[in-house]
Amino acid sequence: MAFHTNNKRQRIHYDIIEGDRSKPWLVFLHEGLGCTAMWRDFPQRLCTATGCRGLLYDRLGYGLSDALQQTRGLDYLHRYALDELPDILAALLPRQAYLLIGHSDGGSIALLHAAQRPPLLQGIVTEAAHVFVEPVTLDGIRVADRAYADGKLKGLQKYHGEKTGQIFKAWSETWLMPAFADWNIEADLPRIACPALVMQGIDDQYGTPAQVDAIIAGIAQANAAPAVKAMLADCGHSPHQEQPQAVLDLMYDFVSKRIAESCK
Image (cartoon, rainbow, N blue to C red):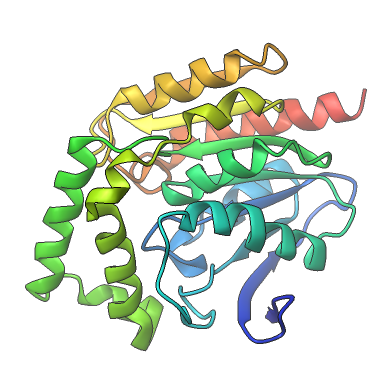
């Protein structure tokens, strides 16, 4: 399914998972090279376990959505969080409660969105989110960049089609810009007032535990909602793919508690 953004010029692809209409939606935000299809069956499994409905969508430039129409700016995560995501929620989930589940870039987008304190947001889950740039992140992107140049990431074409080169370079070149080295959203974290589950693989090739510690500490400054840390052993940058059952159990417990609290 698809709808057009407010400017009526760009098409956003989305999928709906049916569930209990009395429960909040689970909105899944994909990684920096991801899309709806790359979540595989994990969203369905979580929605089935919790009874919640699910919304997955491809951000502009990704998957089955339209290609980017302009060069990406250093504030691209803010634009996805503060412009695109609210448009999607207003169009598809008007006046309905929701939780965000974000992986990598999607996790950073979830944090930036939550910092605006939207009234219908009941909680966020982040997997491998970034709040500042680390050397290990840039090293991992350089490795991916070389692999792409060597033709080792052709599998991305299955998901992004003719947009693959554009979106890969938009991701890698933005993060590797010298000016992006100062990107930091820690100042936004104390404004987050909803509960959070903050997850990361111990062996994440794109970030250290300092990312998780910063998120937990930042949210704790608000003194308004719990932020739970979960570091996963034998796990890299994609916890829901590498440790699916452990991640499913953690998210199930978190979502179930949010549902129970909303019913009080």
